[in-house]
Image 1 (tube, rainbow over the protein chains, first blue to last red):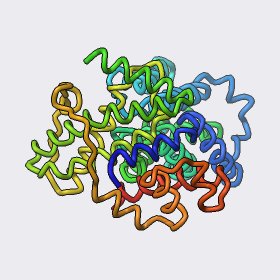
Image 2: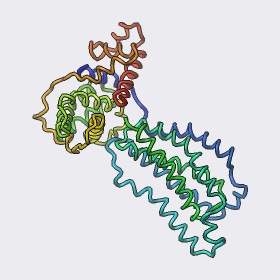
Image 3: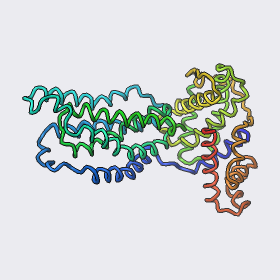
Image 4: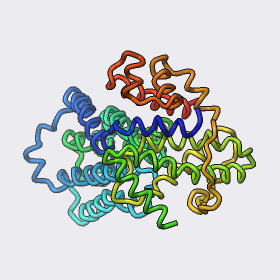
Length: 212
Length: 181
């Protein structure tokens, strides 16, 4: 087939309209979310003392941290789905959760410690945390990759890593309502390790499936 | 250069608004520029320039299937050249070449070195033969025989909607095969 002929067939297909990447990502995440919530409801559930925990600023801080990861990651992943998009000027958004955690760790250090530091750091749930966040992330990660496949990222591995970050951020938001470890030290350690695992999976899979 | 790229942006806006003729004109206008850039990229990688047409066709297919990622408020050329670069890199990688794509390969084409011509490419033609019968028939009819969608529908006793679906699926399948082969 010569190129003029190919162009003719492309022009004939101009009536076909594809939805925007944002719409596909939203839809895919909405389909995946019930699976993650099912894992949460079956194995974890909201902690029993949630009403009193809500008065603890360090409990609330966990949600600020996880959402400040998930929302910027969604925004950047949509930005990167355009072929000409650069990471430059956008990466700093991912420093938001890091900054929040630093402030939280600082304020906790200034308070009279309720528990020794090693106990705050290791907590009671570190194993669960490292298992539960990736497990709840996987359906969301699959959904995010499916939605982002609709885009045209120039760097598929980077876009996949962002898919990992956004799904880990959303899964960690669920997990935060279960976990009774509220110390920012715990969050900074175990949530970060879990997120790194999911991000690495996202990058590895993304480098394959996000090529267009 | 500015004028040419502004014209492309205008054509693409019309195309996205449903003007098929503008879309056809746009694709014909960008093709020589893509061809010159692909040749330059191949030469830089020490590859024969006769593979340029395969790359051009792959770029055109990607442009077509990913045009919803173009922001109609943004200029068209940077978007187009980004896809061009990605496809050139992919093509060189598949041929086992150390990849060095100059980012200016796609941007610095002068109008003088872009004669209108058309050329056949082996890869699309080869992959075309692996498509399901119906998609292949429809693509052949519209592309090669230059038959309209309406007449193609009559020829194969299909509805126009079914022809459109087969055409779009055929183009998507072709793109996937080129990417993964």
